[in-house]
Length: 130
Image 1 (cartoon, rainbow, N blue to C red):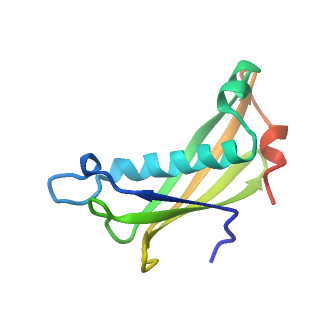
Image 2: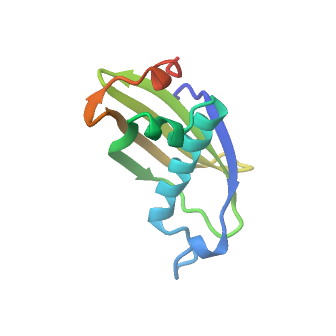
Image 3: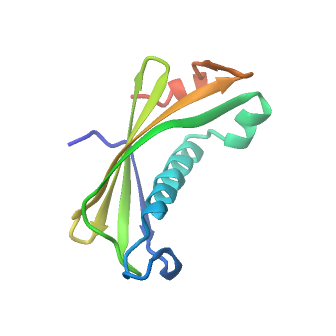
């Protein structure tokens, strides 16, 4: 099991579901993005502030494995782990349904920082890697 450094509880909203009554696949990306942003905010890192300084963290690759569908009003927890591989920041992000902790989504999100138009390391993100 991955080492998680952040967790965020959420609840499925009706409009996130498709005709089958399950969360539309694209919304899982929204859940993982929201978790990354909340994690960074909890650590004092502001995307807007970074952008103003010419630093943009961008997603380079995502791998999603759907395990169990979520349905309207389901509660779930989004867990995040972080490691660095070269210039990439690799977020391990998994969703678990509550209260039974059944795996919903297993994902890996690779991000890179573009500093003044060139890929580079980002001190603000480097300090968050355990």
